[in-house]
Length: 145
Image (tube, rainbow, N blue to C red; front, side, top):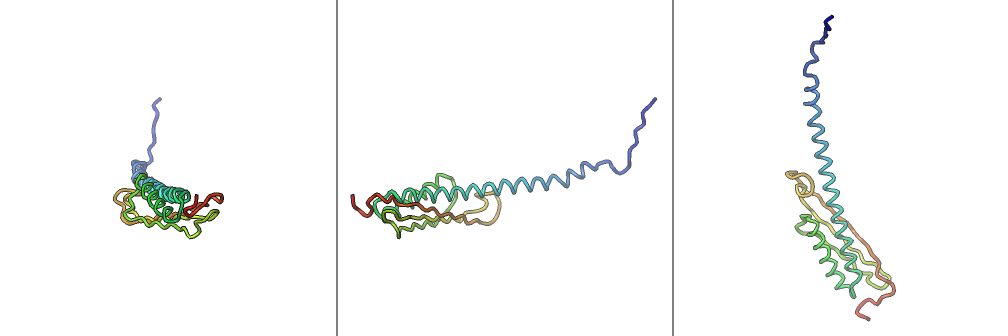
């Protein structure tokens, strides 16, 4: 005959109440994941700039040219990556710039969190990286040919 449906009182709207509680939490988690991903990407850009700087430095003939070319390479790499870094600190260590020696380039960049994570986020983040490369041991360094 006719089917009777029983309803338990108090269950109406339970799914909506759960959605209202869970949806903002999920949204916050998604926004945080995006923000952390963008910060990690910006860190990768700084590491890439340090590598570009050290690669430009080790092929130069003397330490002064190495420092100049490292700074130029770091600056252009950061600009090409679109990373907003008003005053990057670039340190090129050429104290061991001899055949078989090493050169290191350190880059430190203080950038706004609004630029590297979620727009509107207050604060700043210091990103830094160091790259080291060996000077070819079979080449003449220091103006020789």
